[in-house]
Image 1 (cartoon, rainbow over the protein chains, first blue to last red):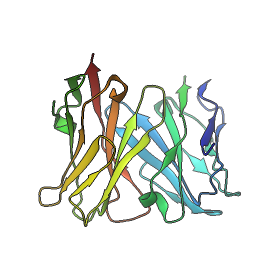
Image 2: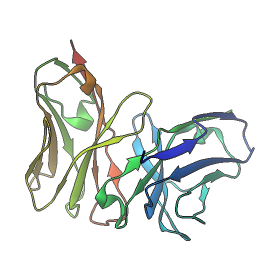
Image 3: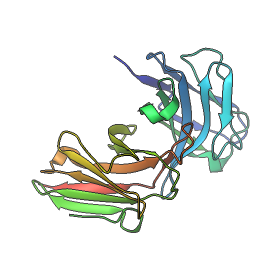
Image 4: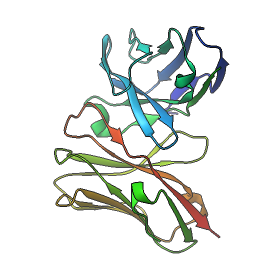
Length: 114
Length: 112
């Protein structure tokens, strides 16, 4: 089944403790992206990647890092999480050409930073 | 039932009625638009898209209308069913091709 898989689905952590949210897609998509979803603010893009070793900032990149060493994986790294990063996170992928060909989203990761 | 997107983020309709969800987009350079449906506890799912060289596109029970003059997009759902209850987002590419920008969404509730 074609899908985007995120792990974990739920995570509670403490301020300052580094964490990684993994994202993997099995559709051989070139484009991958991370979004956060907050009430009243909708989906905001954190980082995106056009292909392996090519990443770029979205609208809200502060406090996050990403890497794209392999085509299928696009992990989101929070080096020192803070409570304002409590949110619902979605990974998405798209074929070559970017999101103009439609995204496939993962099921989400609900992160709580205390 | 009809919403005005950002100004009326909730919409309730009777089962079997048609629904209209509206979205005002921001950038006249946007040339590609997508409607997504997000059910509770799930990621957004692609419903239908439209490019700026079109003003109407139809899918199965859904129709998207694009009015570039007033930068307005609407999603029409025919014969709304309980399974249509979800949050609906419009998204625009602002002409960049590399990034998509999502609206805050409209919550649709179908009353049996």
